[in-house]
Image (cartoon, rainbow, N blue to C red; front, side, top):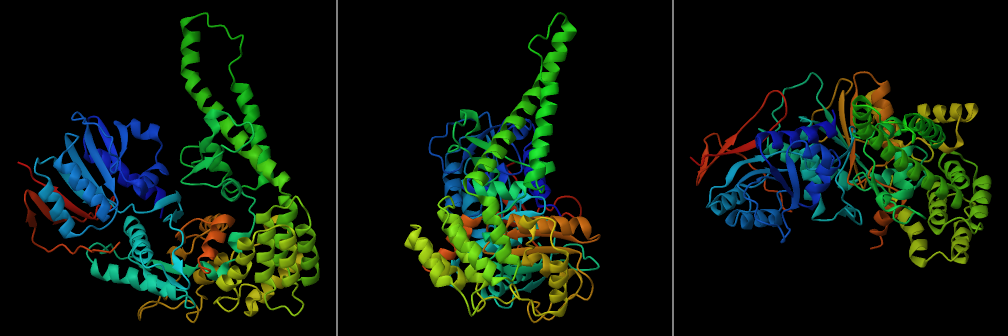
Amino acid sequence: MNVTLAVKQYISKMIENSGPGMKVLLMDKETTSIVSVVYTQSEILQKEVYLFERIDSQSRDNMKHLKAICFLRPTKENVENLIQELRRPKYSVYFIYFSNVISKSEIKALAEADEQEVVAEVQEFYGDFIAVNPHLFSLNLSGVARGRSWEPTLLPRTTQGLTSVLLALKKCPMIRYQLSSDMAKRLGESVKQIITKEYELFDFRKTEVPPLLLIMDRSDDAITPLLNQWTYQAMVHELLGLNNNRIDLSRVPGISKELKEVVLSAENDEFYANNLYLNFGEIGTNIKNLMEDFQKKKPKEQQKLESISDMKAFVDNYPQFKKMSGTVSKHVTVVGELSRLVSERHLMEVSEVEQELACQNDHSSASQNVRRLLQNPRVSELDAVRLVMLYALRYERHSSSILPSLMEELNRKGVSERHRRMVTSMVEYGGKRVRGSDLINPQDAVAITKQFFKGLKGVENVYTQHAPLLQETLDQLIKGRLKDSQFPYLGPSSLRDRPQDIIVFVIGGATYEEALAVYNLNRTMPGVRIVLGGTTIHNTKRSDSSTEHLSNIELHPLLPSEQPQFVGAWTLQCVKRSTGIWLGVLWVVDNS
């Protein structure tokens, strides 16, 4: 199960279907993000795609020598833009691909607009999600909740995104959901409804053990998104912000023009791929080795180009050197900025106290350490609020709680009232009254024993003591010990055997710490394949904005009939492929 590969295959198939010749890729805002995280512009250029345009752009020129590949979400706005495009086509021929199910009425409207018969093909390719890593996806949705319920427009969008992941991976799963979350149950029912309606799309080859979709709610573990991280990808997202694999470095002191925005993609950057999950200390060593290797390969200034062979060798090696030069300068800049922020914000000291709050049970020590850091003028407002949030979640009902005193410290530090209110909102969002799990003090005998022995052995690294609740949940699931009373099945059936293919979806957003846990489980559990997804990928700032919501696209499933339907020259057929990439529904256009 590889979500990156699934989306890449879809895009490759689109380009391949259009045949040889110069092409333009026509996208919307969301599909632009979907494509950009799995393909670089230079990779697509090699496939004869020379132009990238937005369907909603008003400034596009007529280019009849280009074929148009349209990859769009099936929204009313996109369909209307496409209708206008087909009435006055700017390109010679159109290959149209929707990232999800589109209604028959909208297909009819498109067919009627195609008066000049420029449409060669219309298909559904289910790439309606952001493939962040091979085992991690996001829907890039924030603010999905309104109190304890779904934001009305975002339940259908989340259902679309999640069902597209299932279709892309060719999985028709059994569903388990977090009982303490009404949102998890509603999403499970919504996905189940689509699977039932679209039974032909989900008619995949049966496996001995059915796949499993596990739906969780972020409120069950509000601690994980609040912790500073120390692996490369997670640190970059926490401190600099990763948005569709792009980092904005424009605020870095003395940054050069070409490094104001950089791309970090494990698909196209070997150093990044090899260091994704390594801790900060190891990254520093590897950066040093990368620099030394670069110095050895750097062309010497006094190098003489005396013969044709010398010149040829120089030209052959130059692109590789140029690429390595870009990689070195990019990672040296990123790691340098991470190092500056760690030092400037005293993050090692802050992180040690965060880990103590999350993992230890010494209220007296925790109280003193949090108060000491709040009184340190170099600890930022964000870090101060984060520490008090963690304290409030950890010692919510402690008899000697000093939360009012800490709130007063925040006030004295000049923290805004809006940020101070977030502490109360965080407890309302992820406090004991809401949680369905034993996040703080486990009641299960096995979990208590684990915690006891962990305390006896100590930890190798005080900055990475914490393990997300998801890790324990998946461990219990794989061993067949996950309680039905906490995660019931949707419907009468249940799994008898150990699950092999697991898709986990976190309403309210997943984290890179959880992605690391899934990566390690995939490596160490033979026969088990896990993919993690969420409405977004969290860092502390996104977690805070989700909490603020407490204080504060219709689906048209298509059920093709067995007989082809005709709309003008368009023939509607249902196409199923038993091998290779799943192509979903195909409209064959006969303009002969």
